[in-house]
Length: 135
Image (cartoon, rainbow, N blue to C red):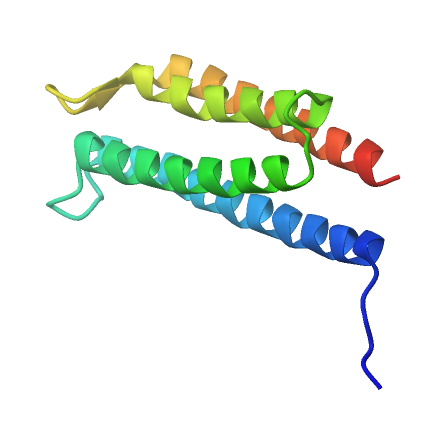
């Protein structure tokens, strides 16, 4: 006898997996900001600079956008508040890059701190939307 998982249960499981990935990527992005501080203090590995860090950061953002879009499309959430909040999160992540000066390998610390605050607010907004979506 085969045991089939209902579509609703599959949706809940996939949502849980997506949220887990969100949390993993969030941790990855936090590490990038920690690395910025190491670069600024001169404690990073010699080959690590803001340009290289930004390239890797953008690569991970693109991977997460692809994952997010796949989930959004699968459940037809393109015009939902959840999609909007996820998109706002991505925009906040990308906006943080404009406070890096790649040529001189320096950052605008005050602006990066504000950008991190906006990112945290967008994370909370997204998680609240996920909560309301699955309730």
